[in-house]
Image 1 (cartoon, rainbow, N blue to C red):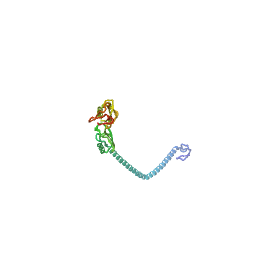
Image 2 (spheres, one colour):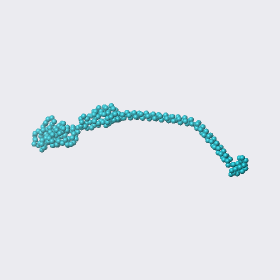
Image 3 (cartoon, one colour):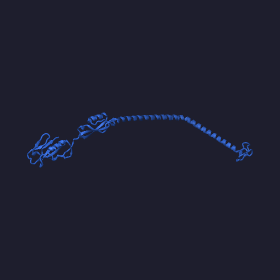
Image 4 (cartoon, rainbow, N blue to C red):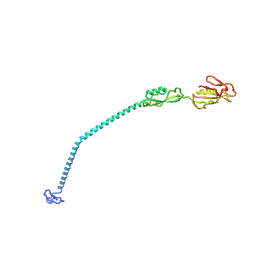
Length: 268
């Protein structure tokens, strides 16, 4: 039932106007609804305000303790990180210094120096060394450094090993073929290449003083300190007569009966 606010007459629920005074009942309902909604809003706002006030109070009370703890921890953490950074920077500086010192040694040029002089120079530069030999035919290079493993002027670290190649005189010679030559011709040929030789005589149908054989085959490379034996012919008709033997300083003879045993050393 709807009650008219003016005449207080009871009306039906769906009535739009009061049956007695004709006052519109719909507007009254809207006003009531608005009043209810406004009241409910006010209540909600009060509740929200009370909740927010309570929460803010609680937060204000707890905030200082949390801030103090977090600020102390953050400061401590920053201090630890700073110490770590300083330690790493120091270690890096030491490493760079040692690396620079070890890799900043300039390799001196020792080519052309004697081995003793070269090793003294390398030792003064705080470098190590080792020797390597190489055969050479140039007498000026004998005993001298002809190569070094690291080029002069390059940078290297301390105690780096430099290999020094030292020249050693090449005394190897190639044996010539003197078979069929006379003893004098064979002696000249061997003297030219610097080979020592010995002479052994043997009876033969060939002419006297012809080289029949040589103890080392032709073309073989030997050291010039080795000696080669030449087998020289003696004529069968030259019984009990002397046959000449070539020598660098003087001529000598030997009897036919001693041809198998007599050996004459020939030096370069």
